[in-house]
Image 1 (tube, one colour):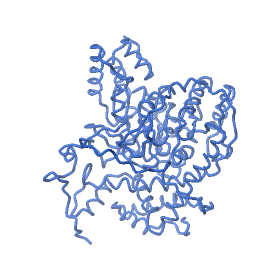
Image 2 (spheres, chains in turn purple, blue):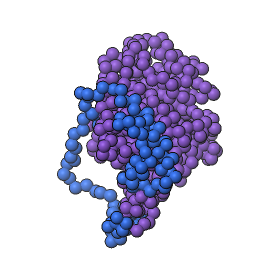
Image 3 (tube, chains in turn brown, yellow):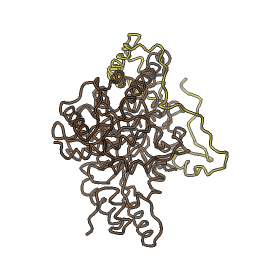
Length: 479
Length: 103
């Protein structure tokens, strides 16, 4: 039996050169899903039959000498808040259970055009609201490295799918860290691109000024490859940056010699000591590889959590108004429309979604708008200005991704503030609209993986991937 | 604590739930009030900041109005869209009476 490569780039190359068939690859990954999915619950839906049919079609194209896409035959798992035409898309919410979108998200159609094969829709915290995947209406995802622990969230299913070998790559969405934090907790690579670099068309909106789609992968090069495939202007998203997708894979192996890398001297406290130790080792590694470490300050960073938990719920309260029992999803019948709305939304949404909708409605309500939402928008400006000053001195900044390693189930689920603090290092990026990635870098408490976060200014993906690649090279030597 | 010095009350939560079209029973109002008060309490940290002269930032980058070319393009299939609706009638979404029976 042929050996199946573990990376997307390796699979694409092996299939294109006819060393293995797309069917052999997909069967191998589906077998891994069959073996372990009942323990992990990474997926809301596994699309095995469609995946095999797609693989057979690619093999037929290859046999007939027809052209194939650059990702032909690469299995990919898709977060279940990305619309897939005719394939159930739930956002892990009872309010959308059974909904089959009438169109594909742009990222989904771009991946299919490139030849990637969807293996399934991955579990998430309901409507991407959460940091552990415990808020899914269909049950939590378990961390493949220790099934007594959470995989992080909200894209916990997509992170776990890659960590468990269910797919070499996956897509998630990141509003306040929902790609990077689960990537860190599951020991894989996760990328949140610059706001507007990747189309949001067909991504079920949570907080539209913060949401961005990005990849999970086992290698930095694969993450760059998938970012290239999904990036670039889309007329269907009015916030899409009108530029073609950048070339990024080449950056990964360029090294960091001569680069200036920022160390935040006023980083908000709260990280576990092992996490800080790994961060310091990361700086030492990059310095040894020829980079210069420069101290920077980001004095407004500690206020980012407040700004985020006002802005994101405010936008969510508006975005989630569409789930009203009229056009799709659940309806609880009642005597008039207002009663129907209230009963439908009470039955369809889980507690965290209700909390954020109420929080956002409160922040936007008369008498509180200026005190809460208006103020949060000004704090957002201060954070963006802090970054602007820092990026005048450095090309990228390094921080931990998550202050803590993956925690046991139930630890924080009924204490929203404790859960929100998991996002303290990832949130500022989204407020500024910048790119950032998490790269696995050794382990912390309980032997669980630690992720180092590389932050870069808007459209700074190339330097970000250079540093990500250097960290990956060094990570093998870290405990 | 809000800048006005009052934590969110159960009456506030009940009102907000009504505005957000979320039916919530009394026991849950109490539960949510406790949790939201804790979160809103954290928000008072920004009261210490001097934000005079700082402009609000609503988007990462300035938004420009985007209009597509005025060319006819295929749109969503009406039957497919209506098939996903809880109820439809005569190619329209069907809803209960809009005029309230309770207020």
